[in-house]
Image (cartoon, rainbow, N blue to C red; front, side, top):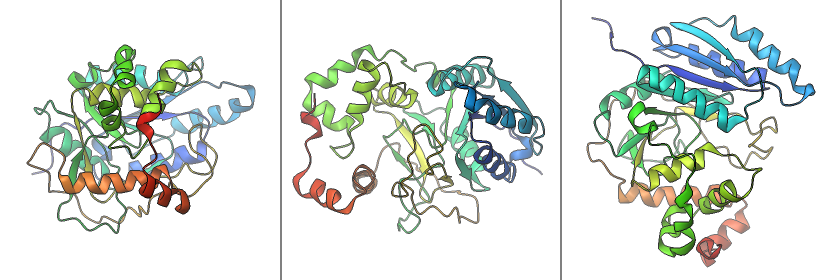
Length: 314
């Protein structure tokens, strides 16, 4: 018998990168479950006149997309910005379907990405501590681990994610209690993943600098307060292709790009039975985050030796 399960819809958020968008959709259409998946393409309106042509190019292309159960364009009439576009779009779709898978326009997926995301959503639907699934792994393809997927506590990832309506209903857009981090050094250290990445600085900027508008750091804080977990594959099923200067939040440096060749040639079938972050995973995550935080070798060594004091930055 064929696979008759209900698949989660995918939302793709786009702005002004038509070539990236095409690569993302073409890779997604090659996924094993694409023909059973509803795709919603949320196209934000141009913020400046110079972007109008590219925005329209994406919208014209979106009308031609095939390979999915359906592909529907949602064209914003005014510029929402990434955070508002994502928050409102996810809320709309997840409340309709009960689950949702979210991509941005610079993510290229392995053909088994949709299967992993849907399997994870089905498997952990009744585990409230699990608040998300991602196809992205912080570990390089060469990392040797005795399992195919793992839990970690960095629940605010934007490089592909999925969640359930009941978890998303807890999203705290205001984060009014963020100042708990100011007064509590231990809490701040834990939020910074044992002092390996300055997530606190991002949240502080979100709350105090009107130019910062991150949905992901607010989603992380929402889930961090609940000691929540996200499921990841050991070998990444997603590659970020946005490090070419074309995106709002990605630079031109190649340093942050992981060695994700998307070479997994079969579905992931092994999932954690223990709902928690393994000590081995925690150690490897700290190593990965130090590298992401300080990709420059000299700064990386300095960080390891002297442990730059993130927790002192109030």
